[in-house]
Amino acid sequence: MKVEMGRPIGDLAADAVDVDSEDEEEEAAAAERRRRITAAAGGDGEEELLVPPLNFAMVDNGVFRSGFPDTSNFKFLKTLGLRSIICLCPEAYPEANEEFLKSNGIRLFQFGIEGCKFLSSDIRDCHVQEPFVNIPEETIREALKVVLDVRNHPILIHCKRGKHRTGCLVGCLRKLQRWCLSSVFDEYQRFAAAKARVSDQRFMEKFDISSSKHLSTTFSCSKR
Picture 1 (cartoon, helix red, strand yellow):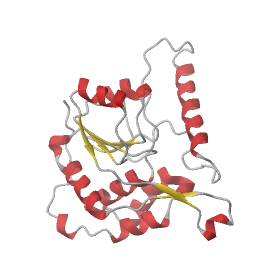
Picture 2 (cartoon, rainbow, N blue to C red; picture 1 turned 30 degrees about the vertical axis):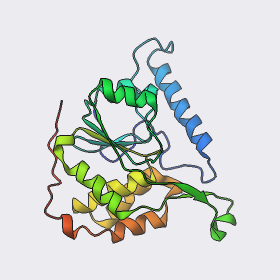
Picture 3 (spheres, rainbow, N blue to C red; picture 1 turned 180 degrees about the horizontal axis):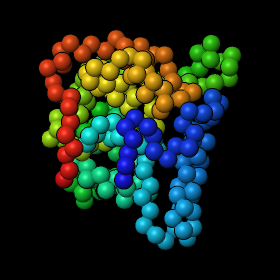
């Protein structure tokens, strides 16, 4: 399977998300993508299907990103030979996911970053609810240490939708990899689309990499 770095897999309209879309509509879109995959496989759903998580993409050799995996994604994840998963959500990990990790020898690193929603005065005029997450810098630094340790590879980074929290962590990794800011923001916006936030981009812009410049960011493909 060939995976293009920095592009969400299975997203038929990643660059054209309705500004007024809600989480329920996004879930419905994901279900529709799964239905199309089933139809492409023969329509009866009896063949073994490999369904990637929402917004799944390859970041670099041995490093992947996505939204929160569910049971329909386990067969696909098994093909990656994961050693580790970074979860950026604070909630307790689902029992089914924990069983999957245990049965496949995958280590979980959880860096809980709270998420909430608010309506700003400017946004209210447009009738758009923008999710807001306060990204703690130290948490991102600790998560980066895990990502940069090739002993944890192959590794999957995920939050709920694979957009904001995951996007900020990947953006800070890109800065360490000497990406220019315009490229960092372009990758972030491909996943966040109409829900891209200026606050996230400011965080990535201000993130200081001077203390981490000595760390290696060149990853060889590490298979289990």
